[in-house]
View 1 (tube, helix red, strand yellow):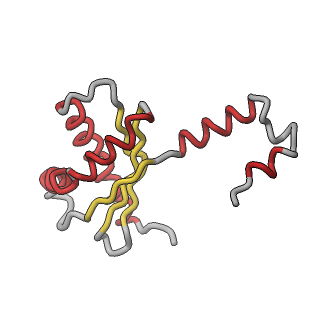
View 2 (cartoon, rainbow, N blue to C red):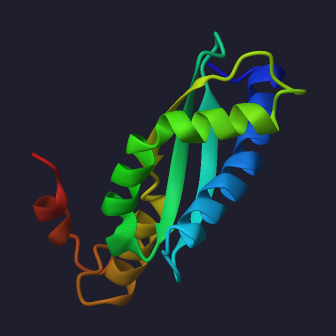
Amino acid sequence: MEESQRQKKIGTVLQQDLVEVLQTAATQGGMRGVLISVSKVKVTVDLGVAKVYLSIFPNDKGPKLLEGIKSNTPLIRHELAQRTKHQLRRMPNLEFFIDDSLEYIDQIEKSLKGKDNPLENPDLLDKRKKS
């Protein structure tokens, strides 16, 4: 089902403000050299839940940072509510996830450039299938 205009608008507003909130929190928390990007925000039909997909660089800090963000979700939600109080009546609950699509694309590129290229050696496709 495609998102409605209202869902897209709320997602965009949340995405813009979340970037500022998370990046500020990371730098104030002493995490220098960490880049947090909000790649997508999907809002449910009832506007009650917003699924937030984060890209974190460097990748090895992602799980630890995601855990910290999840534990501080009420504070982040409150900060967002303060920023969007003139645009949103009700702040949706936030659910955070790691967006690993960039890693997936990178793995595909490495496979195509390396010796494990499935296009040149079709026998490799069988061992790559998920069980």
